[in-house]
Structures are given as structure tokens and as C-alpha cells.
Image (tube, rainbow, N blue to C red):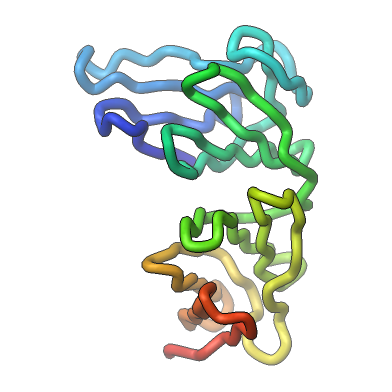
Length: 178
């Protein structure tokens, strides 16, 4: 996964094969540097950027004010990157996911799980995870996910349908948009 930094001049990359988070500086002729992690260690250790380690980070999502959440595939944990403090902190175990997106309206991450045929929500305030909706009757293989103005859009790889739901309502519903 990749995400722009808050300046819009660097791209942050979750480098799964090397167990680290990289930065590509567009102002310095695309210079690549390692922010945190180590290619020689494949475990989950929190701490400063200098000491924190990852185990196959695959997704990185901006969550406001220069902070990011990284999904660690091997440990199935969400990890918080605080760019000001230059620290990495584990947020919680979420299981296997394919994609994730941040929704600022409710300070939550939404994640697709094609194997479990569900979309899950991780509330960044309470650190609680819940299933937003499951396969029956609509979803077969939820894969890609995106957010706009509190609406979550999910693509289904098996049916080629796109579904959405509004996060601002208390009783979320999936409405087919095929």
C-alpha cells in the first residue's frame, strides 16, 4: 500500500517484502529512505521509528494530522504511525483483511475480508472492532474499499457489483448499485 504524506511531497510505502515503511521524497529526485522497520526482523515490536519492527506490512492509510495506520499481514494487527513523535504503536488484532479505508466522520477504519465475506469497522477511539455487514444476501468477495463524505463503497470481486452504505446512520444498510 501507499499514501501521500501530509505535505504532499513524499509517498509512504508499506514495503511488505522488506518489513518496513519507506518514504519516497519527490523533492529530492525520488530519494528512498526507510522510516521504520527492518528487513532482517519479521515480528511486531512497538517503539520509536528506530526500534519498531513489522511483519509484512501491506496497507498504509492516512488518518489525519499526519498520522497513519498500517496493516501488518503476518500478525494481522493494525499499527499506528505517529509522525510527530516518530513512534509505532499496536492498535489491535483485526484478523485477515484485503483493503482498508479511513472514515473521518466517525474516526473509524473500514476493512474488507474476502475470505470471511464481510466488511469490518475498527473504531480508532474505542479500539473496538465490529462486523458492519456480511455476505448474506449481497457480498460474495468484498475486495476494494473507499470512502467519500461518510459513504463507504465496496467492490465485490466475484459479482463485479459496487455497494455502499452511509456511516452517519445508526442502522447501516448495503444498497446494491449495480
